[in-house]
Length: 258
Image 1 (cartoon, rainbow, N blue to C red):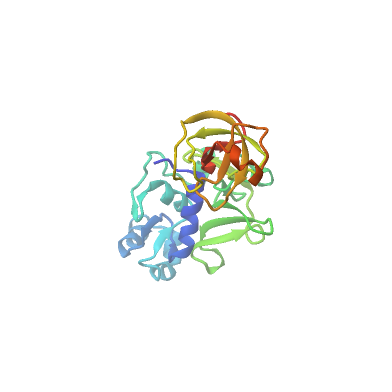
Image 2 (cartoon, rainbow, N blue to C red; image 1 turned 90 degrees about the horizontal axis):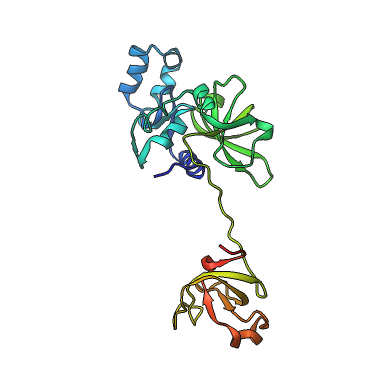
């Protein structure tokens, strides 16, 4: 299954609603005593040692460091099942993630595409851009010990200074398509089948391919919402009802030839 920018955003948002704990090396698995002991006794992690009591209080919570929030999404095969380093080579620190970004630049030039990664000036911390709020302010999700959060939190440009953005190579970037709404009188191209009733019952048309038609009626609540006619001179609305060729689903109506 492809890992996308929109999927990354939804994954990060979902972690705002569950108990999380920040510990270096975490990538989405529940924190255990064994994980802590490995950081302390084997890896001699000074950050974990200094903050041992805070981290131990998070046993049982989902554990992330800042890059682990991205890795958790990449490595999760199904809810709660998180492998390691799959795809191979994706176990990266912040600098490696920045280097792996196929497009990057200063934050002021960042395209408004949710799912871009954001980086601080020293390339020591990373977050995920999730879009703008109703006031037009950019919003981010990150895993951090800052502000006594010690976990996954949402931030913005007033409390966190990001310097760079990047389009991560392990993520496929797709756009969230906004459905096009048509109105009676529009000339459109139909790709698909129509029915003689807006409810989807009655006779079925042939499968049309780029059939040029005029919208006579729009019934928003009906499954076959658009009543269309091949007679583009036909009047719209009720006077044009007798000219309707068939009713079509919104997904079969296009502004341009396909």
